[in-house]
Length: 568
Image (cartoon, rainbow, N blue to C red; front, side, top):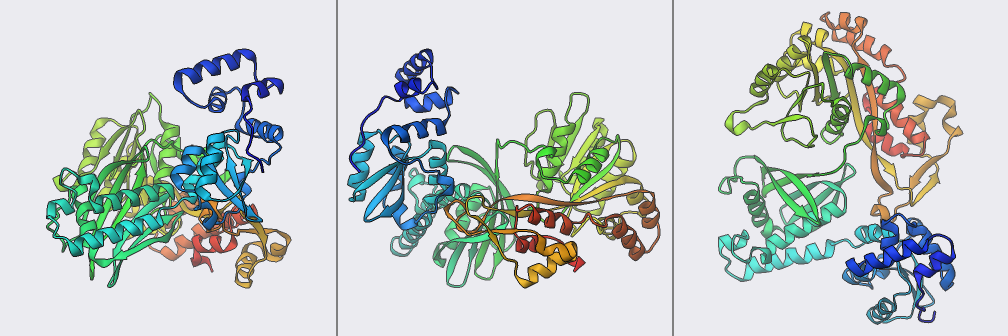
């Protein structure tokens, strides 16, 4: 393809009737003032959409417009163009045909970009138009720093092995802390974790290496493996950042710290655990400033949402959200608080840690080291005249009893509990030592939930069921199991070749009506479970997971993984 010609974007948009002379004049003045690209100003000002600009440029220059959401990438081609150049010139290598590279540009009339990219890749190039928002999102996904992280780990290993390093310098305490290999390594790990949408970072010393894994959409993925020699330096630096005792390596420790990476503020909860080969470190990433979901946007089935809202708008009682760690319990509770929050209600939360910040709430951080426990805070909270109390977790009998007394004396209490499903939750409370009458009188509703990975829209394709998947679905669908179309993700650059991108909730609930209250007051867990099972017939975690399979949102295998297997 010949070198592209320069065109006047503003004039083109006016000719197409998408822009007025006044809007162009405003944009030109803004460009002179800010130095931003004209097309960006048009879009940010709401004059025209990115897709409209891209399609007009493609028609005018007789080049293709490529929708990056539908494109399958080849990593070896993408890496021909360095990430810094891809970001600077808003460019991406899309493919190759007959030795000629196809390069997507947000501004195909940028002659300097054309020349610089041609020189960098040392190949002939054909130009295509891509939208800027899609391009930047794609660059974030496809330029992963796995090799760079491995290189920094090797640099740290070499430095520790060959050069006597001062203890303080190793931890990044010197004036050149930002140059310390361990600091650069951790910075890159945090940056890549945010780029990958990881919720947790696992740093695990093994016999012969140090393994770093990310939990993405609920599943662990190996990020890199490094020399085991650097494990102690990495653990020490993280303990220092979180204010932990760096001399104590024999006992578990918990802490937290705050970092800013890629213009994002992130709270990090850290847990260390002594293992056979060193200290294992797990970090939970809590991005600040992210918007809260509303209950209407959480994919909660209509009947479940109706009964949940009914319980939430009662003046008193307890609503429990249950599930394993990382199942979205806190997100659900804060969505509920967001709906209940009003100037007429006093809401107090007691948490460890405070994961979301919501204006209008009185949020208390538990601090066990100074004996500021859940129980102690809750006693004081009830003297603060609250209408609604959120207890981060029912950790022990004391916390549960105080919360339930509050629910029985005119307060709405929201909390979480770690149980397998909704129907076993009241039994778990009894097992914790909570008096039977308290459970019967205080608990109004139990919502159990899981998070299921959703199929990537960019590589979604119809698929045939495997025999064990068909049998599992037959439990819910009977002979209709073959009357539906099922899907999976092939794997692409948009989803890191997993076939999944993002997660959605699956739910079940148990409402403590008269029959269940009578059953819980009897000393017969089997009878209670029988009543609960009858009440929940057709409204279980398993049934809700199947709903997402039939809607093409997730795979049968993923539904099997997260739904309750006790029913099989």
